[in-house]
Length: 486
Ligand code: GLN
Image 1 (tube, rainbow, N blue to C red):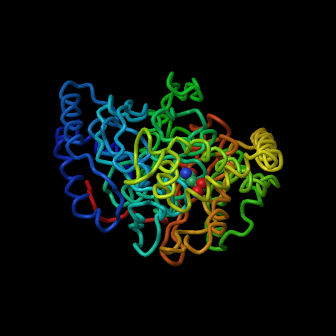
Image 2 (cartoon, protein in one colour; image 1 turned 120 degrees about the vertical axis):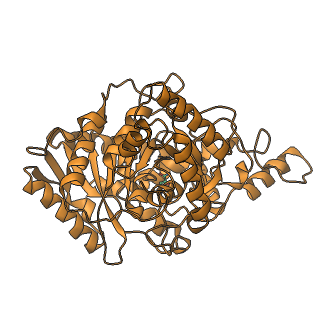
Image 3 (cartoon, rainbow, N blue to C red; image 1 turned 45 degrees about the vertical axis):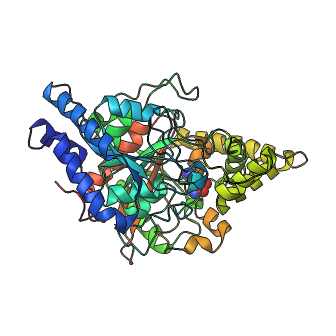
């Protein structure tokens, strides 16, 4: 896949283009193409041009870093001071936070240029981005198909060259699965590697901000900038990752121990299995040691995820009551009716379903049978993943059991949708990092993603293994033509 950030940065440093000029190109491309893809739900072009002027000053004073002057986008659940941030929900209609998330603060300090907020499933609940109150973003690879979700707008924008990279959030696959559906790279970091301050909460023990980009190198450059401990997020961890982007390409995969768990391949589309088998063979041919393993606990991951995620969501979303911010109905007789109407009218069906499921599994009499049991099983999953990483350096798995669904498929059955998260949710439950990289197209021309999974804080290992594939394997997913090109 194409590296975009480094060549753009070179052009800026060589004064072939200024950041303001580059930003104007992105703005023009968004104005021309966003109606086709519905990737952005709000734009911040004035701010982007301000950011670009700041970047040009950094460039002029020789203080530019890798991301200085490069236009990007934030998912609509990541706060930036004064900009609409609505989680694509009617209940947060018109909401403008009065502070910056830590990730945006860090990027802004490096001269990043923020073009706007991108589309997503309402409150990040979904796998197609179709639960957005703004309507679904479309997959630039084929607009009759979804982008995946929930960070679908970011994936669509990066794929269509309407942003050089995007930040999304991944609670159960929401960065990796849309990256795989749109044929780009998506990284879900270790839980605690990136501050969640300013990320609107869905499932707090699972949520992590991640990167959607055109290539592994681009992903590493962004991760290197946004990772790190933060006093505003007590779950963030002080771990020195070093500069991962600089390590890429310095090692091969000889002797790398790659685990392949057969349970990961049960029930997946045969075309995808064949594609992943091809990638496994590629690694083996290049000297990696393939280790067949069994991970029977994987079968428990979906129910564990949907119990814990819904339980946490029911608690996190309790704050939307129409009193402090967001949507409030026009008429009501008393405060109780106001809260009832706010939540009834403000939340969409999927969010309501999850609040009800979560309230149920936490309620007295059911708590032990569901929530407590799920927490115990989560410990088993963590222990089994730990064991695997005593013998393997990384695991290879599909990112999803399928390629991009046709539009409206998700309306058919919520359970069917939940089942499609089987490959991604174990990673959030156990808190480990994983990266999705495009490997080839299926017979319909839709991209297939491979997931490389590592133990906690092994971002360097998984990104190096992904980079090796990207550089040396046959390129099976073509770069998208359109939007801003160099
Ligand atoms: N599809 C999963 C869900 O609906 C994951 C969403 C996410 O990672 N935010 O919960």
